[in-house]
Each structure stands twice: as C-alpha cells, then as structure tokens.
Image 1 (cartoon, one colour):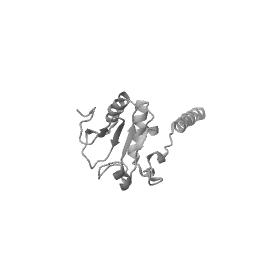
Image 2: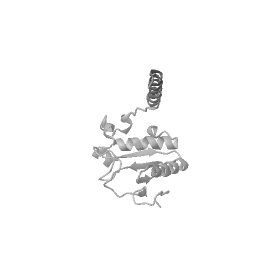
Image 3: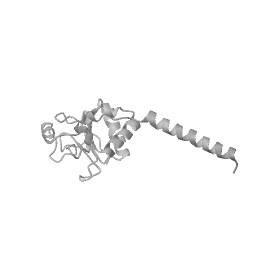
Image 4: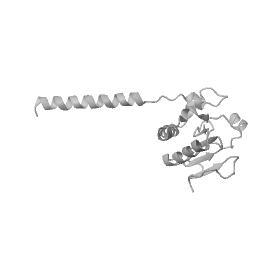
Length: 160
C-alpha cells in the first residue's frame, strides 16, 4: 500500500471519529437527579435505576414532552411513601427506585405518554387524571395498567 492511501484512510478515520465524539458531547444530557429526591431525604434521587432513566430519555425523545421537568415523584422513603398513600411494596421505595410519576396537563398528553411508554418497553403503567406512573419492577405483575384510586379501571389501557 502506498503512503498517500494510508494517510487518506487515517485522515478519514480521524474526521469521522471527531464528528461522532462532537455529536455525542452535544447530545449528552446530564440528568439532575435531585428531581427524583424523596422530599425528606436530600440526594436520594441518585438511587434511580439506570435502565429506568434510559427509558425515560427515550420516552422524552419519542414524545417531545419534557419528561424530566414533569417528575412528580421518584425515590421515596418509607415514611414519605406512606404520607402520599403509596402501596407498601412500591417500586418508588429506596433502595429499589424503579418508578416515577409524571405530571400531565391534558388527557391528550396523558394518553400520548401511555401509548409511547408501552412502545418503549414499559410493562407497568398507572394512569391517573393528572399523572402517569411508570415502573420497571420485575418482581411485580407485567403488562398491566391500572387507574387511580387504586383498583379502578384505567382511562386508557395500552395492554388491551
């Protein structure tokens, strides 16, 4: 092989690698984990499941809804969970941290989130009037949606 060919291939590799690195840096989204904190335990949001975070990033990208600005609840201490009426074995509980509640401002937004969440791979979806609960707790029943108050039929069920 001649030197010019090797220089051309090497140069192309450097340019392509640089473009990829720059693109990743520009698109990197740092998450402020304090949005997931249990109100009674500062910095508790750092326990949030990494797979859940990646799925929420996909949900945000797919729906164009600012998911991370609409988090109502993430990590919960047992006392906070009791205060808000959470179930005893909630996926929100520290150290599990496998659930979030996302505020919705309209039925259209809520339904869009529910449908997109299922398509991304969420298999546990709670549907309230003003929020959507998403969790990835593998120890619980999968491919299920429920309404609030607990035990009521969800207004939209992507699994039926």
